[in-house]
Image 1 (spheres, rainbow, N blue to C red):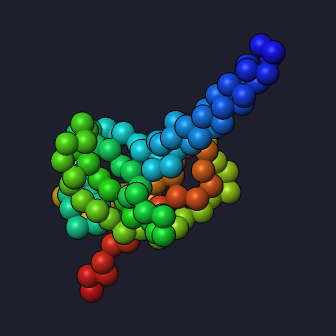
Image 2: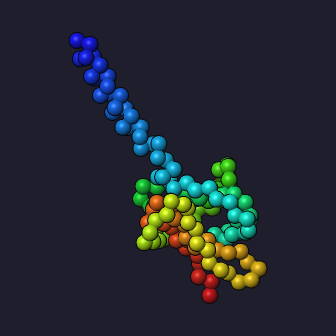
Length: 130
């Protein structure tokens, strides 16, 4: 009789944990990445001074290529940047960011960003000033 009462409780507990498990991976969903730049860096439409910033994907089910750039403690949204999907052959266990050189006396431009373990990343879209 006691086992009959314990089994439903156990099944409910397992289901409850299974429902909550995806929420524990929030950082993987939005690819939240905290970085510190020791020199100014350009992102589309803005120049970031040296400092700490948080890059993460916007909470969008339909477009996984919208990047939010926040200050280090996430109290101020600095920019919302559109990106194109970018791919690589090998993943790494660390965040990877590539930069493009710019003319002298201008900051390096952030070209793309890959979250640890991912083969796909975000390539930032810069306007064509010609």
